[in-house]
Amino acid sequence: MTMAQPAQPETVLLPGDRRRRLYGAELLIVLGLSLGASGVYALISFVDSLTTAKALSEQTVSLNASAAPGRPWLDLAYQLYYVAKGLMPVALVGYLLVREGTALRVLGFDLRDKLRDLGRGTAVAAVIGGSGLALYFGSKAAGFNLHVAPSGLPDVWWRIPVLVLSACQNAVLEEVVVLGYLVRRLDQRGWTAAAVLVTSAVVRGSYHLYQGVGGLVGNMVMGAVFVLLYRRWGRVMPLVAAHALIDTVAFVGYALLKPHVGWL
Image (tube, rainbow, N blue to C red; front, side, top):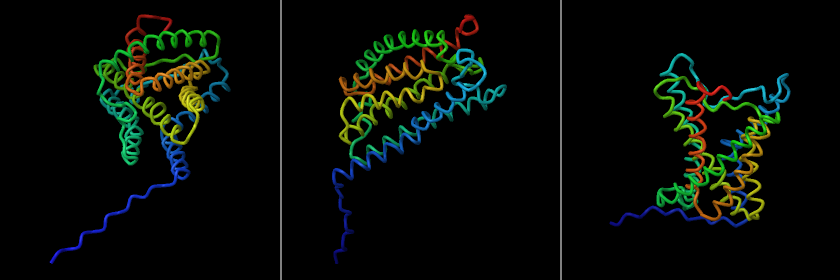
């Protein structure tokens, strides 16, 4: 006797309008769990900085701060936890794209063209990094920016590897979520190219506002340039490489030079 086969679930194709609404809700949830929430926190932090007695240029914000001073192994555990936690929104985006029938590869997040991606990323990093540094010092001198200390980790054996991991995590998170994924979802919702560019740039700038006006404006400009390059190349990997190089130079350079250069 032949056993009956279980019924296969039917594929339900959502109407275009409903699909666009769901993409909008999905995007808000992803941002609310990641960099959108960071933007809200940055705004609160900036208001806090503005309403204190000290001028912005006299205040310091520390990146990659020690989580357990005097206890290096526990500190290392915290730092690795922060890196892994920071990549969870990327895993979520990857899952959502698979549910859509694609994968992170549709954003150009893969290793198919490693050398070209690295070459393009290095060129972008050289231009963006240099101009960004000039904007930072200019806005700080004008009193619009806080002093940013890119590393507050102790001088132990794992400091440099953790700073590089932190730089790479920042790059992957921001470029996959705020560049590739956000642009894709807004395109699917029928937004104009100009509106998508402005939105991505504003979101990127928002979560850097804790640094001051210079951090906001500089990262908005960087965000706009990155959207244009992503449109041209169709891949986020060159921008991931550029971002990782910029942050690595900032984090590691500061850690190595700070004991020897007073103005840092």
